[in-house]
Image (cartoon, rainbow, N blue to C red; front, side, top):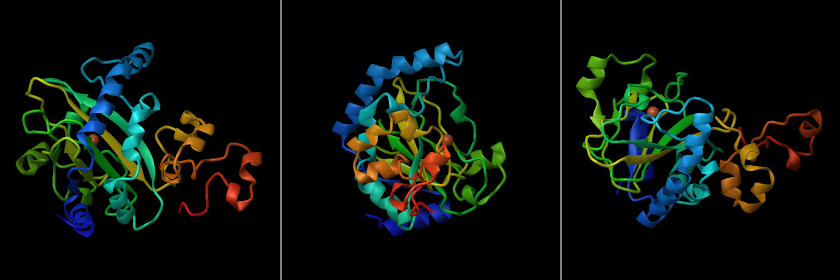
Length: 260
Ligand SMILES: [Fe+2]
């Protein structure tokens, strides 16, 4: 088994690494079940906003309505790894959604892209993770990655990408971890079943979350959380909205001073 420092070296040199067996099938199945029970809620919101697309059919910030998903962020080997990756500096959840890759579908994540559009070189400001809720195979659309591409500011040509990209397969419960600037894309699902993934992105706390999780979940909700999850969801790095909220004693500050 590789050590955490080997995995960190992989990310620094190649732009990605993979942790195996992070989650049990039992937890993954609970998460998937709850998601399918609530999926319609996301469809309804997207339809109401005239942006629903049955082919793309993806969900964002999914744990807001599917709270079992938060258990994926409770103490586990991935979070231990992230502590080391961020050199014991604080980090938060920047975004986290569940995507489905349906058989033979064409979706936007199949185009070559990187998830963080601003090029930050090898700085450890962000790291993206992809939790496999099904086995990820060449047949059902496992992610393609261009090794080392996190170190370049420009997009590789289609030719260069497809000449050198590699497809990262894995099993249920494995987690692919990649630098936010790595050029990648989803594969094609030629199987008969939908492939589900959850993609939590983690960042240093001074980078804005893509949804204001403390306010979306509610400030009182923090009382139900462990210290670690409170940190991860951004309750220690909130932006005050009034001078009254801003002027605080150190322990009551919205953006705590250990957040970087
Ligand atoms: Fe992506």
